[in-house]
Length: 210
Image (tube, rainbow, N blue to C red; front, top):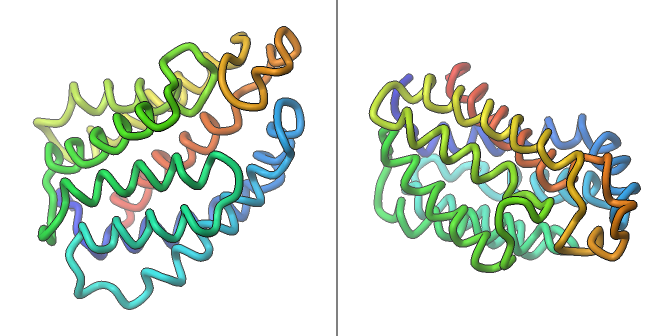
């Protein structure tokens, strides 16, 4: 399938709910090293709520569903993750408003607008050891492939996210709770970057499966 539809978006949410539940302990262990040890639990809870909320919204446009995802995450995910992931989907909703399908370039535009919103809200840049370190490389890779097939572009995006997340391991955190640890924040992947990899891996898998 080479178009991103409302049905695809809802399938992605359901798959994310399952995947974050499966990866809950892994993400929590990462967060235990540098944060509150609740990131895995928060992401699993948030996307489980999202999957429930968007069930039966197949007749709605993409913008409406993206906005529903955003508001659900903001209200159910604790810490900084809820507002940040929420801001990603909220800005994507603006780009997708009134549309029932997006081609590769259209999905890029929607998600890239979301990433820019995350950066503005979190005031983070590449190298700060945050989810931005995975989001930006994902979108840079997506950008290079956005004029081609959706599956190919999303494969590149997920690889970019993975490489970006790996790049956070040697960094000293400059934002969030992890920044209080100074040198002790080194040698661990940022939990937000790790959950971003799951976001893009699952998106790619959803499009392949659909």
